[in-house]
Length: 225
Image (cartoon, rainbow, N blue to C red; front, side, top):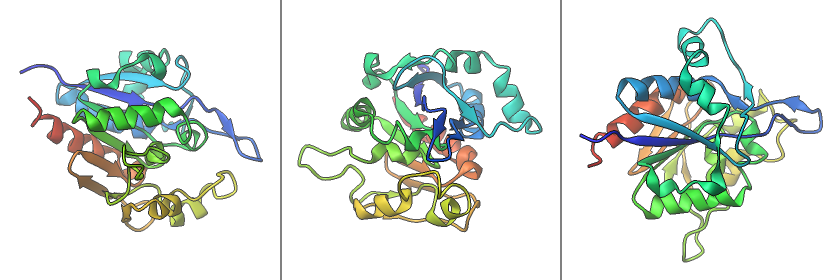
């Protein structure tokens, strides 16, 4: 059986908002899915809109999984991420967008991100995201002009969570915009794990959902020839 490959597409944004909040990707949202996928024998590669260093937020040294990832070769590769415009996502079996606040700034509007989502989907690949990661889907439109998310079951960081976390730092409500674009959005209570699998589209609500997303990706990849 061949090795399956996941491309993790992370943010380059380190500071955002009117109060210049320090942001990046949220550390457990890569570390936890990576742990699951590595154990499943899946290869993980990294890209970002600009390439190079990927800023981070939310690292917890008391979490052994995060601590292990920080000391890994994968983490070192993450800090030398490939420039997304130079990557063909069709070479991978799945793409994955971690959250954190950073993606609300660059992943939300980068044209190569939208291209990656549409190319991966059209090629029959798995498209996945967690927390603020589904912001990658906004602005992606199918050939008929319909929003990529229209009619899809999915989740993301909820308005209730954002209101108590970073409402003053973000320029829009992710849950609300996904709903407006026609997504069949669901969520759990704030900070509780929640996973939605809609065929090849896999999404998790918040940091607590990262392991669930990793397991769902692994299960989906196991069915890929």
